[in-house]
Length: 277
DNA sequence: CTTGTGCCCTGCCAGC
DNA sequence: TGCTGGCAGGGCACAA
Image 1 (tube, chains in turn blue, orange, red):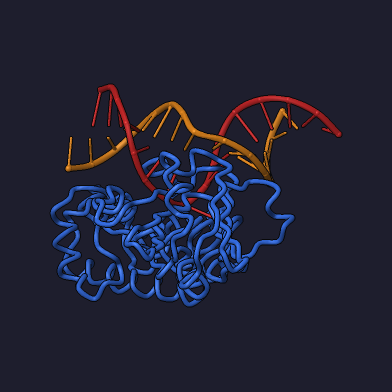
Image 2 (cartoon, chains in turn blue, brown, green; image 1 turned 45 degrees about the vertical axis):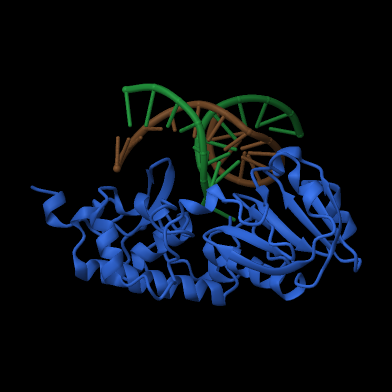
């Protein structure tokens, strides 16, 4: 479910209510959720100072400099003051605050994970991450440069978190449609002009999705249990067989790197060099 | 370095 | 109706 815009939505909701809250207790119901069980020991007594996002990871910064790092994976959700009924199933962890407020991590598929890191302790999962797609210092020229140094199919490269941090299957397909680029093109064959289109489309799509509160297709909900709206603006994702909004050619779905790629075979046709007669 | 496979988990849906 | 296989937005380990 969650890619950059969804994680950004969750982070901003948590940011609106967590800072200043002191943790009273942590109950881990799915032991694999927490590395080593350090969280249940380290978090009680800590006051959360700030919540932010890096790639698809959420970070809770605490008063002693420690950081709780959380990844939602496919179906993980942080919920603020959940209804008691929702705490009956799929609960990975419950964090109770001194104020009486509750944070719960719900996760149907139980892939979500969290780790506690002491002050100045290295955080391995964040160190390999590529740049933030919306970072102003990531210019089209720098993006092109990074693409040229790799030799991977475009869509697969966009999903690589060491290349860019935060894109997932939905937004990779959507931005390539907007950029009118073929998902199967090798990244080292992209021209500077095409890289500019990717850069522009990526920023446009991500900003729009953030504005819409993310994409809710089945599972995703924000920390206030609200749905996103970007699913109404999807042009190719999960639209296989439907006419392209630009040229009416049926949208195609092809499995690429073990996951679905949606694209318009006409608007995003491969350059001639890749399809010789 | 790249691509492919299996796996972690559960729920849902199409097809038989 | 009931079962089965395939599928799902992520990411990791491992093999070729």
